[in-house]
Amino acid sequence: MKVLIAVIIFSVLVIFHELGHFLLAKKNGIVVRQFSLGMGPTLISTQKGETEYCLKLLPLGGSCMMLGEDEDSEVPGSFNSAPVWGRIAVIAAGPVFNFIMAYVLSVVIVAMMGYVPAEVAEVPEDSPAYEAGLRTGDQITEFQGYSVDIGQDLSIWLALNELENAPIKMTVRRDGQKQAVVYQPETQERYLMGFNRGDSERLEVASMIEGMPLEESGIEPGDVIVGLNGTAIETQEDYETYIQEHPLGKEPLDITYEHKGTRREVTVTPASRTQVILGFAYNMGRERVSSWGVLKYAAYEVKYWIRTTVMSLSKLLTGQFGIKDLSGPVGVVDVIGDTYEAAKPEGSKILWASMLNIAVLLSANLGVMNLLPIPALDGGRLIFLILEAIRKKPVNRQAEAMIHMAGFVLLMALMFVVMYHDIVKLF
Image (cartoon, rainbow, N blue to C red):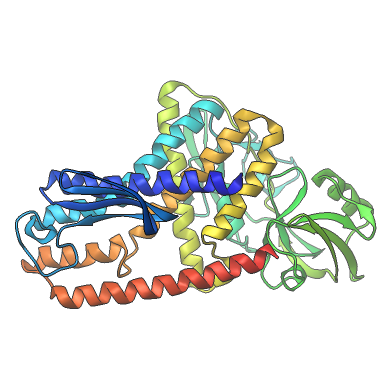
């Protein structure tokens, strides 16, 4: 089932991306020789006018092949015969259509489920945050210089950035007025295994904390901890109870966990770490909104996914994430399957919303990735076209074609490396 769902999602996203190229090519008088879904050998094809429409064997991509696209040719109807700004529009249309699809799907999600307000849910009266003026019900609009529109914005910032023992600076809205809140957070010396929890009711490992014991234990994101020192851990509440009754210390901890349906065991010695205490709790529940609110917060949802993709890429470039943290088609299929199984017991509404949410993530991700200035991607092609617009003459097209080919080969090599790590994670 998860493979079928993944194929459907991939196919819709790819066909919509290529449709952007196709429609803008037609608009600019460029002949489209072939419009295909998938890669590899052709299964079915039909010719309509100047364009061949194909369904190919491997559902991992698609193409909109234009006349003379990678050739030094300016015959009528060819890609290079169109005005440079027309060609820029054709290339940019693919990623733009991905963002449009992400927005349309987000509208459906927000209409079905509502949005997550970035609202302070609880502030202990003896906390520095309360003393600084933070109150329950405040709407967070900025956190440590990062603009916050919805609850997920704060959640992803905290997931991707470690709080430091330095003043926390926030801006909140209360009764229609904005005000700054600045406070020095409290710290606590604690023994930790070193992982961030997922949103599921069970104790799912969402990510590892760098340099902590669990990182080298063999446990991976997506695994579920089901036992500690022989005590069954069925829910996150069970975990909280266990930690209260048996605080972690220097003693080794026997962990039982589930990895792809199989149970495994590992022994980990918790490590001491100074932990910064946020000092308040924030809402992660959804609220229904009016029709205008649906359109507004759907845009915020897309913005959230785009910024999350960009932040993750920056972590990759700075070495905070590695190749093993990337996921290709195999990894995405696995995530879709896990999400499907987790959402299915919650009913059809939650299941549909979960699948649509993954489609929004993938669509926004596809749009951002294609705009990267890497040869063979749309962003790489746009660089050459923008240079042509500035210089009033094209870059050597044969050299450009060779650069794009080299970029394509490198991207394929990266894809196989990522796929290898995805397959290893399955076992």
